[in-house]
Length: 350
Image (cartoon, rainbow, N blue to C red; front, side):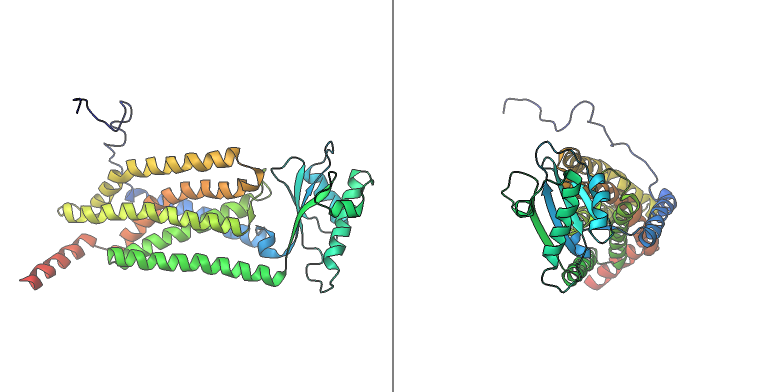
């Protein structure tokens, strides 16, 4: 109304990504090789190192211990010092966001049917911590969450049967999500090749994140525990990745109808180039948020945030370098099929 121009860019961003002419399909073998190497390393790591399973999946007792103000102790000291009290097996120990508080997880006596097993675990934990801090603690006060000194602030127990149920429930949740996505993509695009490309990329994303967690747990300076929260992160990554893939597939389908004289690989590259700006902007916006969570969030959320960081990057990469090339490789002469379909539709309408 005032005669002023309205724009949705700045001078530096006005022409960003507008003249891209990159051969994405031509790099698919490099992408297949890179992803294959990472996933192969992950499979080897699965067999050799396994995962840092949380109490949800392996069963055990989990305690949050808050130490008295002024007590100087670290996770490594606790881990090494408590092993001899908990069945000669070092527990999992990690610092939590509350000051001078540690989460201690042990599977000591988890298979015992003795009704007093939980009390025995607490007694052994008390004996170990008491020895580390100088032998001045009281057991009853140690069990009282309202006590001001060193104490158990919270505790949980997950039995092996429940842990196994949770593990299978998580597996079924992931598989069911992938099956529903396959069906959704098939209905939306009416071609199984699109569904296979999308689901293959999602399997790739899940195995990639799992591989990173298996390879680097115990190496990175924060917990890479696989628990129910991690499963939530994986399902979030699946949802993010398929959203990006559908945008690319929609543009490919649109361009197949528009550029009928171009070869299939040219049309697909053109479609990816045209959506690249949207892909980068969306991915960076999401990545900024999860990076802030990873860098400034509490210790207990770092594993979750790290899974999202890896998932957002890999999900964006797989939409372009895994889902689309696999769809293209499975489709054969996609343009010829589209032309036949149009000709048949015109013939039946006449």
